[in-house]
Picture (tube, rainbow, N blue to C red):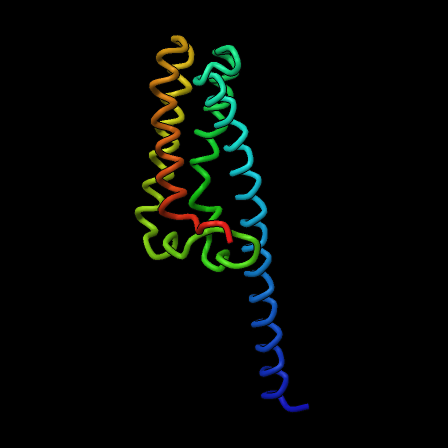
Length: 150
């Protein structure tokens, strides 16, 4: 076999390996972001139930819930790499078209959740006010960067 055919074949194999690796990274990111968003949903429900009064306010649980959101929000940008816009996802193309806005929203969520986490230690009323900012941030991000259910 000629050297050029060997090099050409190696190049094709390398391209396939890179593409497969990229697909694997995108799939990993998709799985991780689903888990992160699910944890956000549980944490937001816990906070919302306390704010609504359907469960008694519990400062420790409120702090834990907001800590989950604050730490998870810091990871959001890396959970949406290029190429992770297909498959079982409701991620809007706007995420990649307005990356700066998307990342700013994630940063604001982390900041708002950290503030709600601190507010929880001072009581139900302070938590309620701070949690409102977290909820608004979630709603805003979903409205802008998530596609509607089909």
